[in-house]
Image (cartoon, rainbow over all chains, first blue to last red; front, side, top):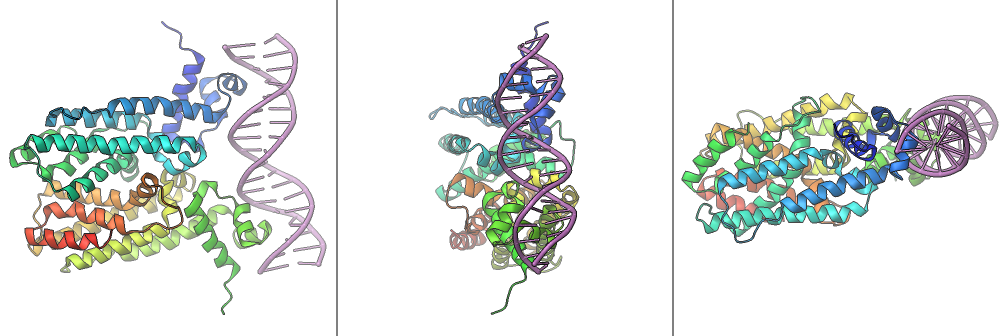
Length: 209
Length: 209
DNA sequence: GTCTATAATCGGATAGAC
DNA sequence: GTCTATCCGATTATAGAC
């Protein structure tokens, strides 16, 4: 039985609350209440609420930048792409509070803006790299213009799917299964795959439903 | 020279401010300041800030429900679809404050949630109707599973494209041109069109860039 | 209809004891 | 490290004069 440090408990609980009711609706009092500690104690560990947000963002950023480092020249299989998407959605979903109120959050902690934009850009690049690999392997056929549009679409979907999903189907706020998002992104790619690959991808995508 | 009623000036200015800096960042004081009226005066016309939001939402809702009423049995041309998308993005963009902080706004004015969801649903249905029409005319070929996925994707994009666009390319906040969104949505549909229609749609989509 | 002044509340943050 | 008590600032909203 390892005792978790208060500092970490604060981070974990904050993340949980942010995700479930939205960062702007979470007061420092609510956090300390949930943890059964005093507000003063919270401020002993973090000098402001913004610091909590920032540290959570940093964790997210690290995960993402790490995940998005796709080797330029690798031969990527459909399975690997599926796995990649799964991981991606997993991360995004774990820090979905950032996406849920994106404009608001980024406007109040504006140092985060450029950093977020960098992640976004890297995301698009990663998708492009994957598509290029598919193309080299003869699994995909697509014009440059379509490719650009597709990669942006994939990036958009990776960002907003979770929020959109929770919104349109009003299942509980606590658990968001990343599956449907992976499914949806697979289906964006399918039209541009070769015939055999299409079937393979369709089968695979169904596992995520 | 018609004098605009104060009540309407409040609504217009609020909308403008909401869109440009985000609804949560707009205080009643900021609104009255911008209008060179007193805060008291504002509260004479609206009993709360929420009432302003609600009335703006109502305008939006009306526009949308009206726009989204697509006749089931009409034969829709690509041009008409383009026009429809243009109108759609125009409306969404004019009330983009709702989308920019969707979760936040809907959580604080929770009577709006179900109404928003209704719009969302109608949007998906509209897209489906259009696609069905395309199919009847032999312009489109698509499996049921793909169709479902496509329509949801179109709905998602219609919602979030503007926010996503302003975010990733940091052009000024005031003007959002709906063009790129229409382009993007066209490209979602293109893979499922017949060969001649594909070319036509590609040409058309470029006008929106 | 519009103003000024002010109340009421709330959330973030600090001081100082234990 | 943690608590209690408290302050400060911002924001919504109201009262009452003009």
